[in-house]
Length: 131
Image 1 (cartoon, one colour):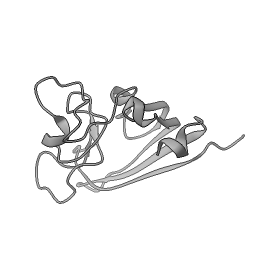
Image 2 (cartoon, rainbow, N blue to C red; image 1 turned 90 degrees about the vertical axis):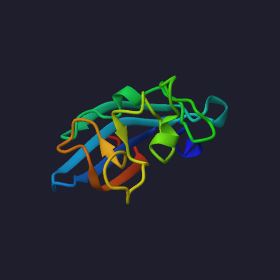
Image 3 (spheres, one colour; image 1 turned 120 degrees about the vertical axis):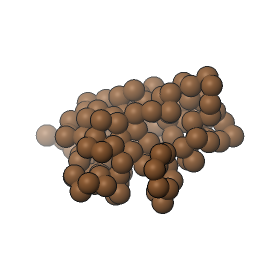
């Protein structure tokens, strides 16, 4: 992902459908993942959409996994709690890389979205379009 986004010319779009069938979109005009030497630090800017700015608290955070805890929660490894790697900010806000089949907490979710829980997510990146 770093190789694909390192020049800073990529944008991100996330399509989601909640468990209560609400369709949500989050777009970011800037999306970048840093190199392994910086633990794949996330850069997201320029939010638009109807899903709330769920990734804003994750901006500038390093990627965490069960064996490499780089989240902001000093009391727990969020990747273990949420059963998947992510750019965790205190184990809350957004996690689109959780256990899809898990019933109840935690799973795949987006903060402040209708019902928070997702039954469908699709993450897309593309080169910024010139207007």
